[in-house]
Image (cartoon, rainbow, N blue to C red; front, side, top):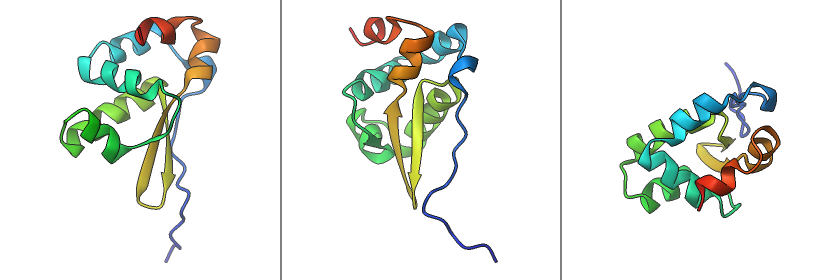
Length: 105
């Protein structure tokens, strides 16, 4: 029997693999764009608080957060059963200078 860990490895695309068309298609949804704007404050948000702030059901929030992570827009950190989301601002700025500023205006 495997021992549970408090630090689960969640896959994220490498900075060099970020694709502008994928990022733009992903943030083109109003809920996901609102998530990016909230995350632009630089803090880590719990999945629950992020979904609550946007007034969406937890399952809907999880779906949108997964798409943002898979596109390389956000980073998800696991801590036990909790998930914390943050914007990959440095990675996005490195790949696409100025993009985050445009999205968060």
